Image 1 (cartoon, rainbow, N blue to C red):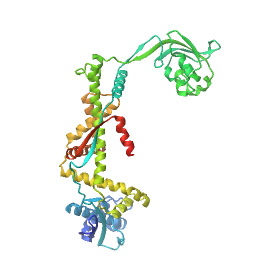
Image 2: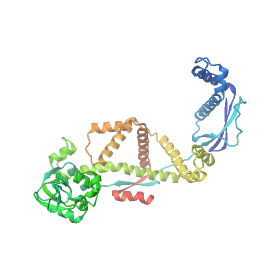
Image 3: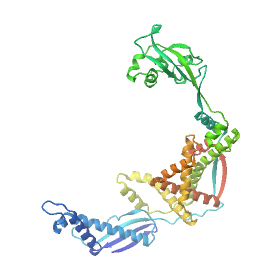
Length: 454
């Protein structure tokens, strides 16, 4: 077998593969013998089908398959041996005659290859980017503390109802001024005034004491909401419509209010563990601020990397690519793509390829390596940030580790984390090389940066 290349340009190559019968004959015979051993054809014992019949049935597809495999290996070995950095995959050269697999023994196949262009970008102190430090506001810290206090609070009975309380009572359907013996009765009904849609009815349930009675129409109060009414009246949804216009009496038996936890030693230990050094609200606020900043750092890094990506692509200018070969490769990869689709997608693909080449170049130049421990630490931070999104700021280390390990067991997640770590390391290297302006912003200001770029 012979493989040769012809350079149409520095980035566009035609590869020719000449293959003769000796290159694939033994593999074809071996494959046919395997078919014969497995063949189960009526009239013949398994493994004893005449080879002539096997060749007649499977000879052509086996020949084509073995030729394709041999050609594929030859292309791969040539690319590896000559260290060709290709983009996409080799595609059949246009205009070559169709192979006659029935009558030919020797073949010549040609392929078009898009080769990576050489893109050189030098970075130094003259290059400038902004790194956005996101600072949590007092309002964010207040809201976080409020959430913590509510999640660790308790329900207490109270004397006078407010909008956010739970009001319990005895509910009976009325017939005139008396209880309807055939009507609905709920001995332990409960409602939250804040969920009542009708304002006049909502006011009825605010300022109540235990023992107070009120008459009202639940259907009107809840705006005919089937789910709410079925739950409140303890009936099926199909029976809700029949309650329209019906009056009920509600006698208050208990009023429950959620009391947020007090900021004290018990709270701090429950939130941060028995050995926490936090003893005051000021220390609590500092710890929450630190947690926010740690969580926001990942977003700041992400923004910096996006800006770096854009900067590098612009700095690279307009490198030459094998445009026609790459466009054909796009279409062959997805036959549903139209010429219009390709023309629309191509500019963005070139940007992605440009950054891919520059990224690879910089990673190699600065000898950036990613270790399993790097990936593990990244997964732990990702796990911690996920829990923090749900207000869980003091998850035990063993739980974080188990969660991180479960994520790393997934191949896609592991690959993604590895790429993110490499990207972050590259970002840190570049920050040391170029001039970086650190700029403090609020989360609101930070989010607006993405809106202006959209």
